[in-house]
Image (cartoon, rainbow over all chains, first blue to last red; front, side, top):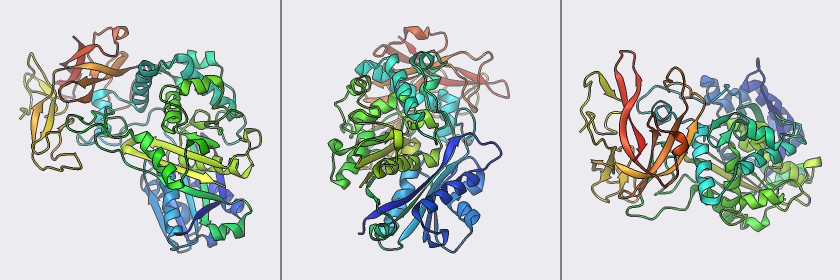
Length: 395
Length: 148
């Protein structure tokens, strides 16, 4: 199986763009990625597009829709939905096609126009647990993240200051990122004084929803070396569904309840499993990471990720945060892009954005955000439906 | 098997998920696999243990009490199909841990509970309460949790 590398990246800034469509944003990201790769659209042999939800049929087949906008030229379009893991899965799919020898060059893209406010139910179907959790539990996505936060406060003594400090740290990084939606530094006071949405999470500790698009051109490593002096190798992909028994109380799965351990001990926690799978494939460990982009849908989740990545023992992520270890310039920068804190979430594009940031860092092009000597980066995320993905990139 | 239809102008929010009609000792209804004995909530039609996949499951009443495992207090009104009371009142969504079944289940916290008193580890029990009134004026009833 051939190795696969990233040769081009393109990002449409995150924000709110009324009057535009997800196709408009995707077009910009794709054109930038193709230019960055020095590859023509007609050289692309495969398109993999992440679905753009909530916008009907064109969004369901986003890869095809985007290909039509760029100009159909007879190549396969794969259209993928894996919730928040969509970006990772689109990259993994292109990688699998190339590494098997089916084709040499692929364009991978995710783009989204977000509705305002909470993501809501998609149907009134009594069999749709995603709809029923709103009606019967009043459980929004932030409710879920907040339950995780309350438990973390109990288990490890995470404080309201810690919850706010993640936002402060990431907002500082966001000021250095021209693609970020929020490019000002938030203070601890204003984060802690922002309205309480779902205890213990304040508004500024929870991801906004944003419009945004990111695209990547990937090729075989052999081809990549012809195109660039800085190919970034996709060293691993991990995207397991949860294992049984999953004792989380319905989080990210059926919302209403966890599995029973009356006969079988709890399986490895899902977040840990996805990280471990990536390390194993890459033959690397947490000590090898130069940086990581992790899915901070709310600020407590960044702390959970630091531990799931094995960067410190359980319960110590707050210490790393307080010591500045996870800031740019620290021992192990987490979310040097500014994270979802600075961007808001654009579901199918977010994991690709993580990949674009890591690629920029590994190329040494991150300017004031640069992690010195960056060689290995990990992108990781988790979403509804038990969907997760992790990608390791290396120079 | 839970009764269907209305009882004194009341309907269950989700049929078969809790004992019906309302009684003094309501309970959640889970499933138990006849082959491997694992419990499931919400109820299932076939066993979800991937090493079993048994096709025969039975409806069982789950423990009525459990320890509060985690919770949140919601201050913003969720989108539909959540039906908000007017005026909207902050409410808690909680997970409790059932001792016998060794599993965690979710529910709203019953109205009238002082949310400041919620503490992880406290004992809670299942109660039934009106969730909202439907278009025909019937009470839609759901399970909730209340400190013992």
